[in-house]
Image (cartoon, rainbow, N blue to C red; front, side, top):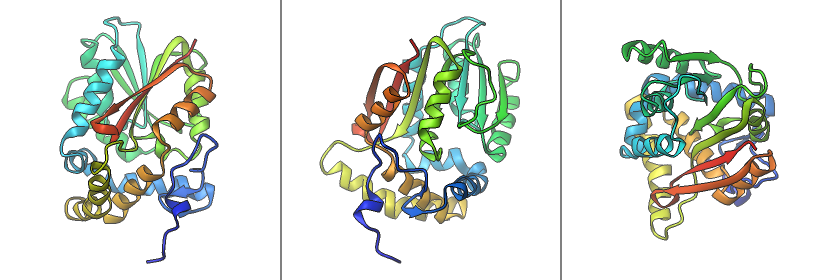
Length: 264
């Protein structure tokens, strides 16, 4: 295996740097989206099972915390857009938190992930409260000032042009609307950070091979986490896109973080 430089491993900054980054590899900007699509076509059917395994079930608590902080109102006129949420995991939680008064639109660029979400919505008898749209986060097919909230969980690091996705989020939100993002981040606890790195780079790809029959896709996912900006840097990117009252909360010592911003 070729030696990976510190620069290739380093997290991006508010100036950008993930447009051509496929994990630690540098690829053509147009090629990146196709490679990411292949990853999620491969892992779609095992995606939620693998999330349980690689996070030791913690992703469920993190997603619950995201829905709680969003605090959707119990009103039928409230509409949330959940981006990169193909399997419906976040949208189902938001609907439950609203006591099934809200409406959710799940958007994903990958139809394999959306198919899983559609099937789950049918099983949960939630098709009256949710719809699924196949589209690109960088070019949302919605009018300006349409949604009350925009959510994205563990997906924005897979968007080639994060700045464009943030600009689109701002555009489709109503004035007073809220952006909220759950994403893996930088561990801020000594010793735990080393243990987490060891588990990520050595354990997760092996488990991906055993459960999903695909080590390379999970190796990419681990590398993409390592390249994603630190909490303060991502908050700066959200602010640069035009959001106000930007803040974040660390979860499990920073393994993940929830970021929040408002369209004022």
